[in-house]
Image 1: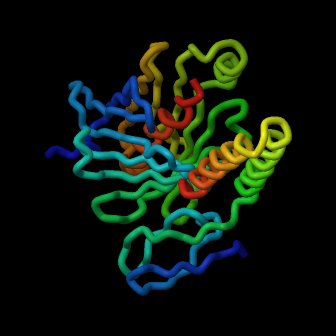
Image 2 (image 1 turned 120 degrees about the vertical axis):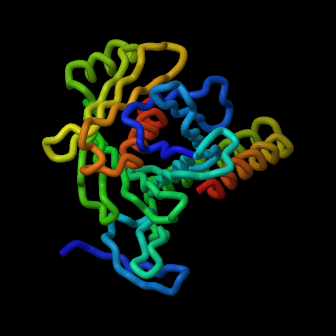
Amino acid sequence: MSDPYAQDDYLIRRKILTIFGAKFHVYDSAGQVILFSRQKAFKLKEDIRVYSDDTEKEERLLIKARQIIDFSAAYDVIDARSGAKIGALRRKGFSSLIRDSWEFLDVSDRTIGTILEDSTFMALLRRFLTNLIPQSYHAKAGETDVAKYRQNFNPFVYKLRVHLEPGAREKIDPQLILAGGILLAAVEGRQK
Amino acid sequence: MSEEVAVSCPCGGRFQVPASLKGGLANCPACGKATPVRGGWEPLFWLLLSIGVALVLGISAALWAAAGAAAAGIALGVGAVVLTAIVLAC
C-alpha cells in the first residue's frame, strides 16, 4: 500500500448522517480514499482514530485530548504503528475567540509551528454575521508556510482541502499536518 | 525552572516530563512508546458535575413534594444513570 502521507493535497470530507461520533473520509488528489477518521462517541476526552480505510482494521493515527474541559485544549498525536507520540496540537483559547489559532508542538511540547485563520476581518464576519463563509487557515513553521487548509463552500457537507507547501515535510511531520486538518474539521467544523 | 512530572512506563522506565503534558502522553526514553502522563485534577469538570448532582437532587426533591415518591425516584434514578455515564466516559 502506498504511503498516504506522501501526498501534497488532501480532501477531508465529513460523512453525513452519522449519529454517534463524527466520521471523516480523507481523499487524495485522485479522489481515492486513503484514510478514514472517526471520533469515538461517548468520550468526554476527545478521542479521534485514523484508519487506513473505513473497515477500521488498521489504525494509523490516534489523536487524544489531554483534558476533559480545557479552554486551550491540547491534543496528542500518536503514530499507531510505532506506538510513539509524534507531536501535539494546541488550540489557543483566548486568541481563538476572535480568530482560530492553533500551535504545532513537538514531543516535548515546544512550539514548532502555528495554524491561523485567514484574517481577523473574515473571522469576525463568520462569528457575527454568518458561519456560511468558508474558513481557511495558514500553517507556518516560523516564517515559512507549510500548509493551507481551505473549507469548500457547501452548507450541507463539510469539506476541507489540505495543501502541503514545498519543503513542508522537512519542517513539520506530514502526519501532524494532516492531524491538524482532521482536528480543524472535527473541532472547528463542529461549530457550524 | 518549569515544573516537571514523574512518569512510570509499563516497560519499567521512569522519566520526567514538563507539567504541561499532564493528562497527555510522552515517549518513554527506554522503549520509545507513548506513555500516559498522570493528569492533574480538573476543577471545572468536577464543579460542573457537582452542579449536576445538586440539580438532580433538587429536581427529585421538588418532584417528591409535587408528585410523590415515585416521580422523585424516577428522576433520581435517571439522573444517577446519566451522571454515572458521564463519569465513566472520562
